[in-house]
Image (cartoon, rainbow, N blue to C red; front, side):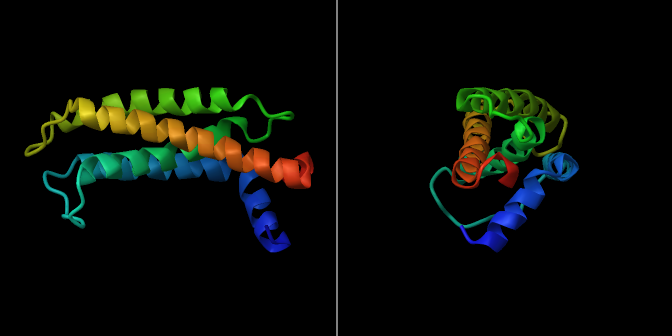
Length: 144
């Protein structure tokens, strides 16, 4: 990792307010999308809806777990970050599915969507831990 990239990542990670802002923006976008009766079609790939849920929730959990745990020294275990991400995905995903039941044209309460949310969020929490642990291992706790 170049020193400028390391400095950028370190700057981002050490500003918890920025991670929380990411979570708030992520949640606002989620609420907005869930309030729409129809969404624009994307590329045709198998199980596209589940892939989108997985990726979107992984980004939200990434920001959420960084906001919670990034300043810990030493870092807590990776499984804790993963479980925290999964809890985030389960709670927000369930609320989102319930919210969609009130949106005309949307069905909501899709167990497949909730599973994609849960697994994506777990992956996002784990990825945040992996990146932070890698930075600290290479450059020490002061780098992040």
